[in-house]
Amino acid sequence: MPLDIRLMAFDYKKMNKKNLLLVLVVFISVLSGLLLGNMLSVRHIGSGLSGAFSRSGAHSKIDELLSIIKTQYVDSVNTNLMTEEMMTDMVSKLDPHSVYIPASDLQKVNEELEGSFSGIGVQFNIQNDTVMVVAIVNGGPSEKVGLLAGDRIVQVDDSAFVGKTITNEKVLKKLRGPEKSKVKLGIRRNNTSEILHYTITRGEIPVNSVDIAYMIEPQIGFIKVNKFAEKTYSEFLNAIAKLKNQGAKKFIIDLRENPGGLMDQAINMVNEFLPAGRMIVYAKGNAYPRFESKSDGKGSCINSPVIVLIDEFSASASEIFSGAIQDNDRGLIIGRRSFGKGLVQQQMGLSDGSAIRLTVARYYTPSGRCIQKYYEKGKSEAYEMDILNRFKHGEFDSRDSIHMDDSLKYKTVGGRTVYGGGGIMPDIFVPRDTSDYTPYLNKIINYGYLYQYAFQYADKNRSTLKKMKNWMQMDTYLDQQDLLTKFVAFATSKSVVANWKEINTSKKFILEQLKAYISRNTLGDADFYPLLYKDDMTVKKALQEMNKKKK
Image (cartoon, rainbow, N blue to C red; front, side, top):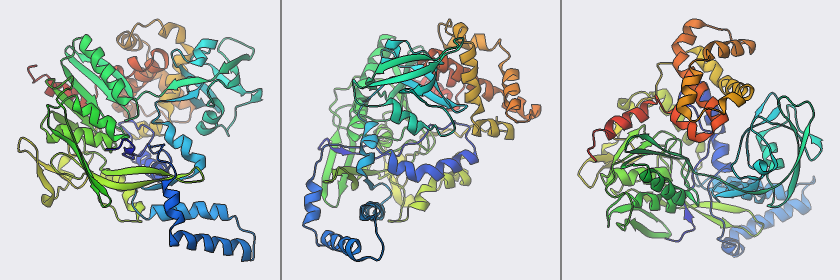
């Protein structure tokens, strides 16, 4: 298979496991734009498509129409804008994942999978109309000049940079730029009255796709992968090697909320777990000859027990990985039914620097399943509402609410029945946890008050919190700080009425989230996920199943 064939995947803001209907509605309302705006890509196919268009009678007819409008229409018309709109409309009538990418958006769309970008090396959050530095990338340009977590960016290149008009997009536009270019920042720091000025030379910032790799229990390594990008496989190999050196003999691979990405990365990763000659995935299309990928038997974890975690936001390459593990009876899939994206896109550059990402094939799991869910050409609205409809139908709460089509039965290597037609159905279903749900919890999540308070608390107590050696010490220390009472006072100041009956129902979840995000804001991701997942129902189920295995 040529390496320029990739799986397009949607992107989304990572959503909390307790997100409620309002959050889902917001997610669905922006999903269409995210599907078109943050897809994962290929960059080097060139201008072959433009040559094909120039020989097309249809293209000549479009040019002729635009020329007539430009020269004869009663009013002045922006024909360039009309062309952009026409391109978007034409491609959208094909399928939900084919897309036209304007030249102005192409770099941003491609950047996520490139494995790095040029910037200053900070994680930030916008609170109270101010850019707050949440964390500094180790070894990055900002660390070298002395920026600190908790700093406020109030000036960029000697101009004020605060206020209600500040957005994430504007911050990224200001802070990112060509490598070796410079940006001047004005910083407000706690306990410092004057504005501090730093000139930072932008450099390469890694975009990691392995969030965390740690020993969750003796002999059990846990790896969370957030996407499949150019360097995902190498990151994954490093994670495996690190955990094996720490005594890991079994692995839990967390692909929840992983929107997918590059097919070759998923193929290489799953090859680490399969004996020789096993089918990993195959793809075919009308003008796309059948391609098959099989394992070579040289993987590093062929005899290691493995469990894969998925949910409704696990898509495309995540489904290739989990489908190959499941169909080869290589390990358990635990969680909820995946997204259902089984189309292969090829990106083709146009002469003006824009591109189209065109669906050229469907991919199939080893048993023959196409896990692409149903869609009608040119009717994207129903497709985009699928996740919300699953939620309304109760699929997140009960496996029995999912109708499986008997005409789409397939058999795994070991003879187990699996189903096609829309996502990967887990071997063990874990419903979402609604035990902590209350209207109070809904409000503080939807308004982001948990995360705001966690940042505020970490910022005020940073010198003490930085002394904690790991998440376990952080957990013990924070248990002694009456966080719940302090948070409720904060939420009350934001006009959230303190309903203690509801607060006590949601207490466990509120404290788990606060402690995890305080730990992230001071110690980083390595001490965030272990605390976040300490009582995670899906992780607990995976550990129960893994501990049944002898090796």
